[in-house]
Image 1: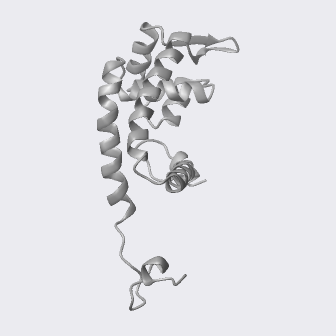
Image 2: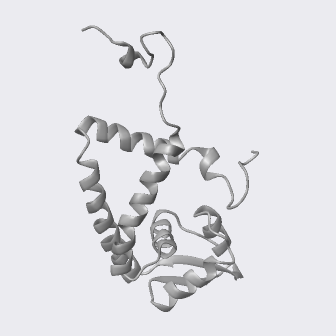
Image 3: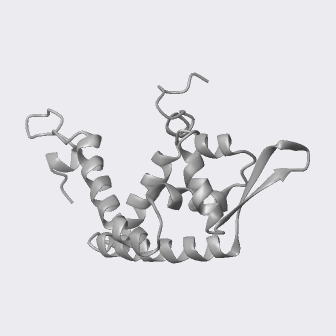
Length: 167
């Protein structure tokens, strides 16, 4: 099968074909996804930050509120109100660490897990409608690529409001 210039990423003159910058493609998609999630979160009584906390607490045991804030890239002083609300609603538990009573251990409650799962299922149902517009192989590759890129150390090791990590 003959390969054409577009398949090679070049114009017929041999120059690289222009593509939009990644941010130009990803930011509008991200905004649209967040806008689509908001009604789901509202229906479940969650803010975007509360949902982020519920998602993260299930993935990784978190020893301190500061560690949680850093992991989800939130300001540690602003996340306290979110944690207070989630705890008051009995969606999370903050317990003193038996080894250091100044430290609070964070965990999901059964109700927090139930609410998180319900919200996530509804959000992913909407995402599936969008993803269904891609051929199955493209969808799998797209999701794999997003997972790989979103897990890059230079993206995950940065503190909120700061430049890239220098480790």
